[in-house]
Length: 253
Ligand SMILES: NC(=O)c1ccc[n+]([C@@H]2O[C@H](COP(=O)([O-])OP(=O)(O)OC[C@H]3O[C@@H](n4cnc5c(N)ncnc54)[C@H](O)[C@@H]3O)[C@@H](O)[C@H]2O)c1
Image (cartoon, rainbow, N blue to C red; front, top):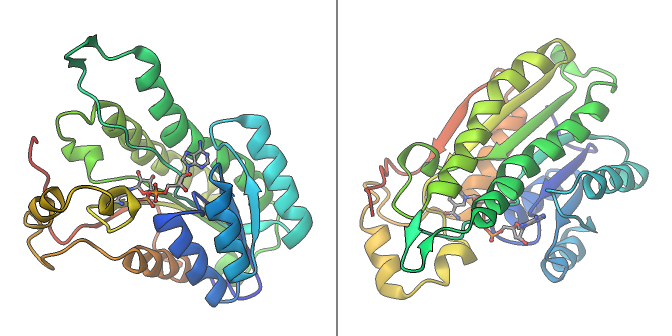
């Protein structure tokens, strides 16, 4: 799909991978709405790219329904959804203070998994009603998983479960929307240099980067954004997870 002139929604657009994807989409001519709880970040990116920042909790049904309606009002219905909103608080199942509070596990599932589903269900309802483009294509949905979906480290039980769920729901969604010409994919990044990683102590960063075979460094957010743009452009990509990890296979800890 050529995104020039089309409306797009990027969740988590106020920081990291979402912010960079929003910049690339805008540069390619898309009208971009940013959904985030971090309004300082979302407003700054929106101002930079001429987009629309909306205060949205992706885990909340009414919040997403209202925001998709507001984005539609401003830009027209979106043909592109990129789910980047996510949280990754590490915690052992049984830590020093006993078992992990169940609500901590639940919150990660709510934001990462239910949040991605929530945005997909509302955005897809608009996409399937739009006029078809070349190849009868109507829309593209990309959700951000993680290599932790399959190689979760100690302390990542909630995060890995949430990202495994993101990958798991992708194929049934791609199959359901196929007759409407809406594609659904996931990207599983390895270690990408966003505030999430770059705020860690330098020795931890060095030890993590040392585990990446090639290239021997963290990924740049623009490498994620460029992959999103390629997926949107290439209509034959559908129903798959693309790893973006420099051959990294995470160890137990
Ligand atoms: N950076 C990496 O190495 C890496 C690796 C694998 C997967 N990921 C995934 O990529 C995605 C983006 O991560 P990032 O590195 O850019 O992190 P980030 O912290 O820079 O950005 C995440 C954004 O999501 C927003 N957010 C959090 N909860 C939200 C909610 N309930 N509703 C709306 N917005 C919410 C945050 O405010 C933030 O702006 C996440 O899903 C993360 O799990 C990142």
